Amino acid sequence: MEIITGVERRRHWRTEDKLRIVAEAERPGARFVDVARRHEVSRGLLWQWRDQARRGVLVAEPAPPFVPVQVTAGIAGPAADANPAPAARPMTRDTKSSAGDGRIEIALPDGTVVRVGEGIGSAALRRVLAALRA
Image 1 (tube, rainbow, N blue to C red):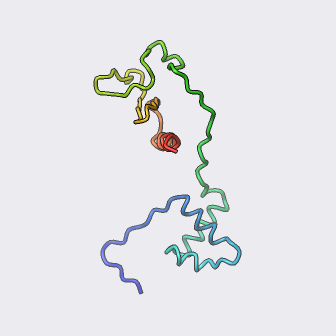
Image 2: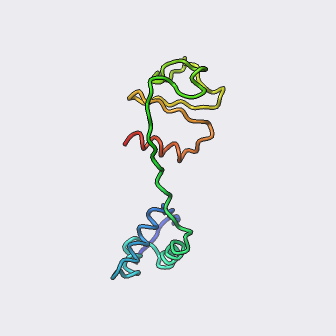
Image 3: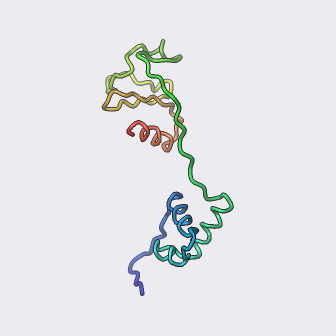
């Protein structure tokens, strides 16, 4: 018997966790009820996840593709004429920012500089920074 005191809150599952639990439930010899109990998920919710996975509604986010990169000493592209400063300079409050053209510059401790447009999503930026840390 489980006694719940206070307000019961609905859990929010990540897509990766849902797919992992569904895959565990579909292994040969796995008992659906045991998998649901082990992960503290109702059987009905687990059936819904399984149905969504089979219909293609519940899918993992594809891994970001990696492309070859060539590092050069200068800044490449159309911004080279507008900003002749070295690429590895740290960003300070005194440094003239590129806010006029809508770009964001991130200087990492190892000297790597990442410049992105203002329209980049936070998830995409997180993936880029995670790839740089790896």
